[in-house]
Amino acid sequence: MRAYIPLPHGLSATVWAARYDRGEVPDASPYGLHKLGEHGIDVMFGEATFGHIAERVAASVRYRTSGIELLEGLAETRARRAADVVLAYDERTGMPAELLRTRGQAPVVLGVGWLTHRAATPRVLAALAGRALPRAAAVFAQCAPVLPVLQRDWGVPRSRLHFVRVGIDTDFYEVQPEPEDDGVIASAGEDRYRDHALLVEAVSRLRPKHPGIRLELATGLPVVLPEELGTLYRGRMDGRMRELYRRAAVVAIALKPTISGSGLTVVLEAMASGRPVVITDNPGIADYVDHGVTGLLVPPNDVDAFAAAIGQLIADPHRRAEMGAAAAIRARERFTSDVMAADLAALAKST
Image (tube, rainbow, N blue to C red; front, top):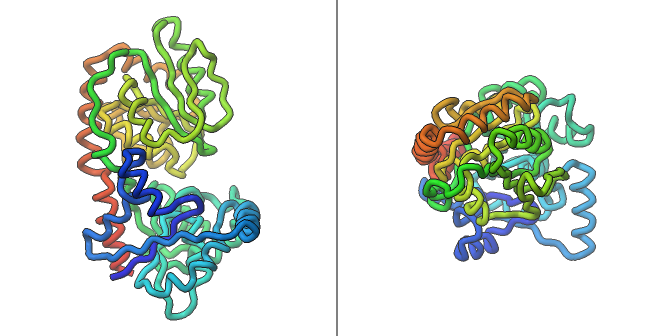
């Protein structure tokens, strides 16, 4: 079976593999999808490249459609014809693949990563999604509460909806030794659902009782982190995130209310590194974090509860170590890119 995997703008399988060889990124391909080959699927990665003028037009289309890569999808039409299935990891590439598919061409397995309720979706994007999603051979999400929304708001038949767990390269994010400093809190993320302001405030409230506490935050989002409270890292960290996890006693991810699954990649990287997590208890998060075992779940918009959860772990090194050890085991049992590839391979073969 041959699977065509369109990569979103800015991702190149060739460049990624070279960076992997240098130890800069996890897995030997984006999302570890080359591992589909271990399940009888011949993988073809696609990546559209344009000249200067065409790229400006493509960028304008992406902007007007909230990131949907219609021109890139059009450029890859011929390449997709050689495939038995098109496996698109998210909407940016999956919706164009389905919208441009003609009779007799390979079915599309379409991943949904950030689309949720129709009422909250921009008009043009909603129109495209309303046409593409119900037509796809299969639609998967990595946050289970999204599935009923895809059925109710977007008309995807229940029989075509699937939950596929996120997986990461747990060899790349190896288990770290116990941190030298009990007071370092690490966090990262730059999607619109991150609530870094709440996280900064929580750390600030812990300062009187834990004077040495510091936040190390990696994000491109606008946020005010006073120098006395910690360090702000701008730009993509990629493999350097391992250093943050190594220094951290706790990894904390504050989120605004959402069902999108925001924060899951950081959660799994931290767990694989042997660090307990404190995270907002949005729908679907409990599928990944076992409260009281691998981390602590906190209600949304509750800065006092968030601070208290971090404080509990900072003050209890033994409990923190137990949770971190349990998290490392859980990540390797359930949330590897090998497991995810096996699930996606089964889904692709069923279409």
